[in-house]
Image (cartoon, rainbow, N blue to C red; front, side):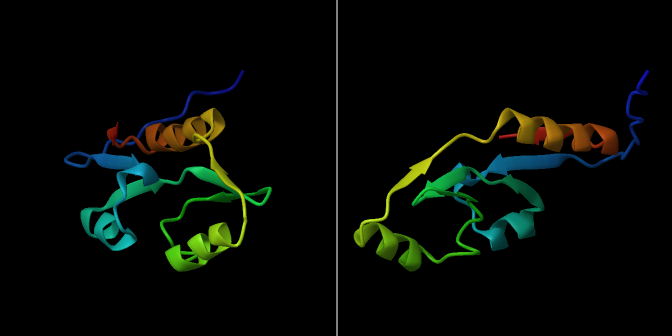
Length: 98
């Protein structure tokens, strides 16, 4: 039988989590100590995770669209949510997802 995770108390701390739809820049998120879950998107059949313009610039992305590339988005997968929030629970840090 698998043991339940052991939580470690961290008094006075709360973890704030947002997704990339909140449109915070990486700099603002780092300043506020906010975790960001990236939404997946598909560009020309290849899946990527929105990393707030870290791996591709807005100009590069929109140039691809203007050149005929097809893009679509998806929700964060249930598995990714479970993985992330299980980690938060194991850390014992209260977590708020906005």
